[in-house]
Length: 198
Image (cartoon, rainbow, N blue to C red; front, side, top):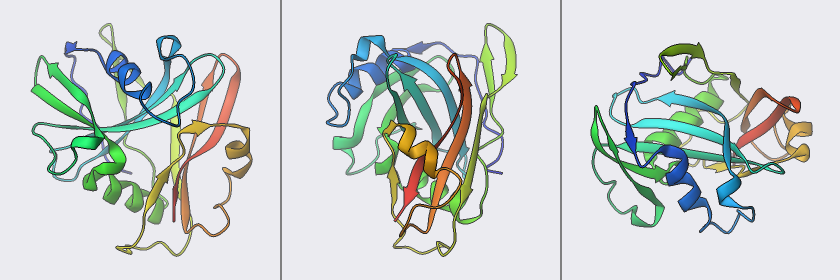
């Protein structure tokens, strides 16, 4: 397992969803209405050094589900200005720089490790109105031939769809491995590939 994610009962300014809505509207893979986006669920990985937060969001605008992994840092990530989602003030940790996770080497290393080891996401507890509940998404890595290859390159599936669901139980053709997830929403249970390593 990726570990146990430390979750703070903190005030964020701006909130995560507001930050993501502003960012996705500028992405070429997003063609929905950002104001209609709502969080379906999230999952996390844990940085072994305890410095970088890693959270992946599944967001829905009512017709499509989008997969948006980000990292949180206490300082700017060098040479990653183009990948900056924005900054937020965290009432416990102070200013946080939020990045598109694919530009962050800590995320890339961890998602490749999870897939290589057929691991799972972090044991994630959500804090909502003082109540702690398990995260309602089951994440698992799978595939052969990835190992710790420095050439491994993850590709995030940004728009989750039925074609991804059909591939979730086996690695994609030509891919050393995939990360898939299962979650429930108002429309039932869904399983989809979320990351492919090429």
